[in-house]
Structure formats: structure tokens, C-alpha cells
Length: 531
Image (cartoon, rainbow, N blue to C red):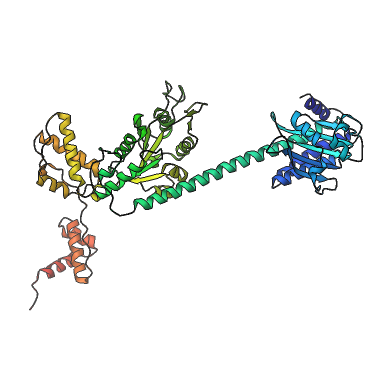
């Protein structure tokens, strides 16, 4: 600190012209360093300018070796701005190691006559003048800037130390920033490599899931999963995938239409895993948006926002040792998706309004009724978050692809309703099951359960009748237009009359013809054909 005070005093006071030239040179050096396009170029400019300004014969920039003690020569330059050959042999190891170890600058007006003469390397190199300064960032010594002169004693003096420190600090900043950039790049490459691996895993298991070969029955499952009702090949294929990953902590993405039972599958996977002893916590991302969803997931401190009257840990911490089910993940804000990705990668979470981070131990099962690839293409889902969540993708088949599973499901739901009312479940008649089979069930298992619950209420504990089922909402049939000209004319007239409610004047207006013309055409259609 004292050296810096003296240095600034020199700049403000009546400095010698040579010192002003050094100050101007440092400003110019800053501009050169800003335009250099590589670490080597930056350090070379730094050493060349130091050699020139301090009148040295040679200049070296050293960094600590990976295995301490020791150093590595990054730049070695002569007075004529040429590289120094075999630089490791041209440096006093005694001086370099002393500066690296003590972290203090050193100079010698004549190394052949002062205390440094005891050093074998100084004697062998026949060094006269030496000026050396550590490259420091905080308490860390990253390397040193080393200047010498073999033929001139008194080339440097103590007054040069603050100036060389200014140069050394610039070199330290360059090395420090380069180290940060390298670490950041390495982390990015590691994440890219992980995403490539995750992508390969996702694609491989997608191919496995698309295999149409028959799958074993329920008796081959290691985990029973009784909540998943049915025995169709489509459902069993899904269950066997869940069975294989139940004993892992792999992240899972459940896909499928609305009402196919994604939360039921998530709970079954949780119960089958070792995390079944922990909590199963679920949240629908489509139902909560913005800051409130961030608060639900990450928690918040008291007073973090209006209404935050107490501290909350958040679901990621609440589900410690258990499972977090994140439904409709594609409906999350992209900024929140980025925060979730960071939390999952670092296994740490920072509550809203807090500067502390907490470790988390949770398995995340996400779900969406959208095509995740399409969601990525349309900007609804971050691709990096997708590969983090979809280590395994499991598709829940729609009810229409599950064969006679609706029969097992219907019986299962009726038993549930009966148990809730403490009555015996009725038998489902063939007529009733046939009526269920005839329906499309676009709302899948959820729609089936809701419809059965409504019919159960009407039955009042008795048998369920087909006539109590809700009328199906059918899409109106679209009648195709004929291609024969005469038929096309008749078809157009019929459609116009239908839209006009039988009003001929209005039908003629819709057709763009006169009312008399329409009457003539209708009259000609009523005449019997001649033999």
C-alpha cells in the first residue's frame, strides 16, 4: 500500500520527464492490450513494453507450474523484440522462486556484488541488474515479471518497483481473466458434453419404446404399481419402462394427452422407488405463473414481495429425499426454466429474496401434454432443460389405444366409489360396458372416471344404466361436394336453402342469382324425366 501511495504521489507531484513518459506508455499499453486477440499476444506486448521502458536487456513473464514449487516461462523477449532461446536456462531460479514464495518485488543494482552473488544461478548467468515483481490477484501469486541486464550495473533502482508493479498488475489481471474464461469455457464444454450424452440417452430409449414387440405381463414386473390399472400392451410397455427406472434417480419426462394418467404414473414411480419413504410433492406449472411459481418452487424469505409474511422453504426443499412432480412444464416462463435448470445442475436452490443457497436432494418427474420437440421449436421449452428433465421419456398411451383397459378401469372406479360410501359395488352389465366401448373418450381416463362418477350418483347405489350416460358431443359431418356439374348445382341450391331456413329469396341472394332463376331451377327438378 505504501508503494502505491508513493506511486500516486509521483504522478501528482513534480515528476521527472522520464516518469511522465512511463505513465503515457502505460496508458498506451492499455490500448494495445485491449486490441490483442490472444493471451500470448497480450503478454508479449506487456513484456516488450516493459523491456523498452525500463531499459532492460531481456524480459520474461513466468507463471506458477502445475506442480509447485516451480515455474513455467510464458514469454521471453530480448531488447530487439525477438524471442529468447532456451529461456528456462536464462533465468535465475533462485530469484524467481524467491519472488513467487514471498510475493514481494525484488531488485538488484549489481547482482555480482550484493547478497544475490551467493546464488549459483546468478553467478552462472553473470547477471548484473535484476528487477522482478510478482503478478498478484488478492493473496494469490499467479506468476512474475522478470527483467535483467547482464552487461550494465545499476540499470534498475528501487524507484522502478512501483512502476513495474503497475505493469505486473496488468499482467495479473490478464492471466486472471484468462483463467476465468478457461474455467467458464471448460464448464460450458462439460455441459455440452453432458447434453450430448443426455440427448443420446433420450434418443436410445425413444427407439426402445417404439419397439412393437410383445411385452411381458404384470407378473414380470419387479414393482407391482397397483394404481396403474389395465393389461393392454400399450400400458404394459409403459409400466415396464417405469419398472426399470424405479430404483434410479434418473429424471423422467412423462408425455401424453390430457387425462391419460401422468400424475398417477408419477406417484406409482415414486412409491416403487427408494424415495417412496419421502414426500411426493406435485405442482401444475400452468396454474401458477411468474413470481408466485418461482416462490412455490424455490421458496422465499419473509418480506421478499407483497404478501410474503413468513419464510417458505419451497417445494424443491420440501421434497427433500422424495419426488417433485412438475406438471405442464412447457407452460413455465423461460426465465423460470433457466433458474430451474441451474438449480437441477448445481443441486442448489436460492429462495426469492435471499442471498443464501441451500442444497437439494430431490428427484424431478416432469410432465406435459404437448409434443416436447414442438415446444422447443416454438420457443415454449428450453432445449437444455428438456435434456435435463428427459433423461428418460415415458409416454402414457391414450385410452383409445388401450384396448379393453376401459373395462378394468370402469370396475376399478366403481369399486372406489362404493368403498367411499361403504357399500358393495354393483356388477357392470354387458349393455353398460358395450355403451362405454362405443364411445371415443377424447378426455381419456379422466373423462371416463368423471362420467362414471356422474352415473354412479344417478344410480344411488343401484346398477349403472347405459341410458344415464351423457350424450356424446360429435363433430358435425361434413358432406363432400359432388364433382358432376348438374349435381354440383343441386348441391349448392340445397345448401343455400338449408342456410336460409327454406326462404327462397334469401337462398337466391346467397347463391348470387335472381329469385326467378331459382324458382325455375327448382321447378325443373320437380318435372318427371321423359321416356
